Image 1 (cartoon, rainbow, N blue to C red):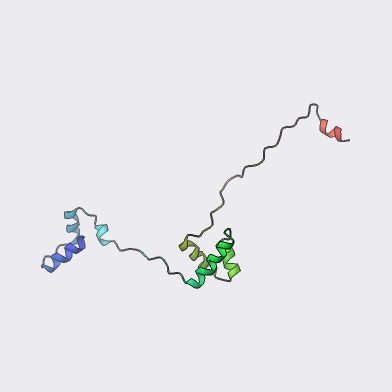
Image 2: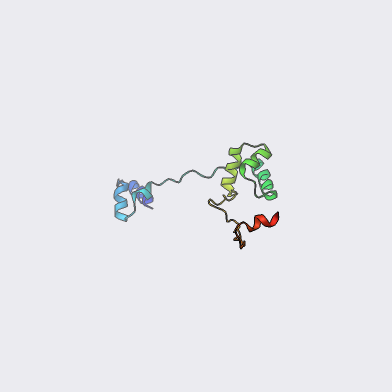
Length: 117
């Protein structure tokens, strides 16, 4: 918007700086100078199709396993996983729940040891 106004004023031979226009319209200068970043990388179908088939057959396979089984470069397979959002969920960190042991029911000291003999 500010850039369009600036171009219009430039055509009328009024050279108004972008900073001054931004102050007039209460728009941050960073917004005017913004340029969009890189676009998503283009994926080749010769990689995407076999990777997708393998993931559908075995959903637990990660990018390294898929790359090894298909004979592709692991970086290429990881890029496909990343762009398509096919990453396998990471295992939770921490202790797994364990089975609780039952308390000893022995009435006398060393009762269990002597009962077996």
